[in-house]
Image (cartoon, rainbow, N blue to C red; front, side, top):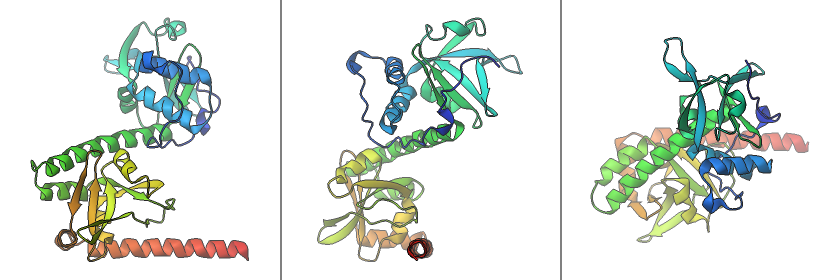
Length: 302
């Protein structure tokens, strides 16, 4: 299948965490469209993670030119220009018609779609090649899966933020917020680098002389704890309730404010939803993970 190929390092591109602040800012950014920002970042050919994050952030909002073909049912479908690398099929998209000039014979029809829409429409086993006049950038299927998960998480966080703000304004009941929290991901700011064992060192706030474990509706909201926590991790809301000790509450931060869950309310939630056993199991798994890590470190020293 003819067409553009991913950059040589596309198959080893890092698994990008889009929650990290992007440090790369193209010159003249104020006058650029998102597609032009993608052009500028690819042209800079920077290999650091900050540039990769900035590229993907711009790509999600950029209006891309997508070569259209016909599917098995005769319907219009993207994928008129594809290439295969290491048994992975990559769909090509372009930041401008100028960049797509060399494939016009293969694709007479183009559609304009945002990068977010394109990535959402791709099959999970497919990769993506973004081509500009200056160069190309390849995204392998695992990275695209990570981007989709981040986009989904942001959408959920946005809804959680809105509901929390409605509770703060008295326009929604806190029980409704609790039900959503128990089935959503929340962000936990922590002073320690997450180790993947499931445990975390919380940031503690005092409300009415009682401690609260601080969580956040989004990574943006978690930045309110930046003075006490250098890191943040995403966990299930039900997990946080299950591991909060007796006499301790939860403080949910949003970008605009906070919602307080007093200790007695947290205890009632744990009882109602039978979360105590879940918390004990999670703490046991975390302890086992920490013990295994200590044994490994001791073995390495020996």
